[in-house]
Image (tube, rainbow, N blue to C red; front, side, top):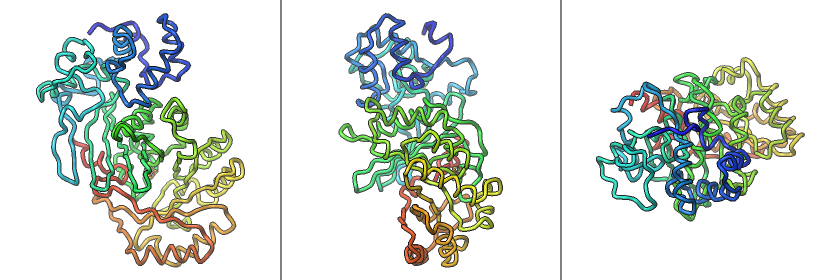
Length: 429
Ligand code: SF4
């Protein structure tokens, strides 16, 4: 396919463009501003990532968009071999593994014919065979798609949770999860970094070390791909930034992505439906307060004292509990929004009655809520989930001391839902 000047000059993924920037680009092509609304409606409301399906745009414009936003792929980029490129995603259903059918790939799926010729498919063009599907990735990454990534695996659990493993153009991989509950909540849990430098002892994300921050477009792509897993009549209701990585170390990409997601012509989520969860970087929390972001803040506390926190969260040796709580106080005073303290219960480590009493003393007089999360076991880590009785006793002790508590049972343990587990288990594939 012949590349346009937009692809060969400075390539910028479609999802990096704000509404205003997209309007300016289309204007430079001699097109009216209302086209921006049409395109965004397809991407955000109608859940399509393919330009060829935007049937209220002229064929000429669809072709121009597909050409302008195809990611350039130099030889050897990704170290991607033809063999790897032709690999279809893995589907893991309740622990049983198979290959995802081409039609289920979504994203950049194309016919072999269109992949070879660079032609974008006619609206409604189908009939993709398995052989066609195997050729899907022969086209450049992002061809006829607003997406940059490649779906490597999808893991589905019978509790309705679905996890995606996405590979970016540089070969880096991240996970994101769709969680469903019986209150009708459809929550996206997204990653913000490739790997994590925080090295929390109970988390599989830190096992491979930190690689890089995700970009705004990559974070948005996670959200759009998760939204597209939902049936037509449903859409995401909540976003939790609790996947891999420390959000406050990537706010320059995260905040613009969340702004798109919450916008009325974006995914149209209310601001209060977004929760940013931090390991407790005081400078990051203070920035969220100073910018008066409209989102909820959750701080991962996970220990009632510095001795235990130093052990399970090495970041605590740099910013001990007192510093973290002081920054959280600033957030509450500035924004008026109550902070949630996350507390993963690890059997034999932080789940005793003495720990509950210490935690209650720490949070006394604070307008806060403690989210108690029984540990979700990961085979590569040595921790254990406490019994229901231990969990109940811990929660009762906090409540008796006047602390507001919620218990969150983590969904999706059958799909490797704890952050980093799917990526880790498929690291050589
Ligand atoms: S729990 Fe969060 S901050 Fe800690 S290592 Fe895992 S991803 Fe990083």
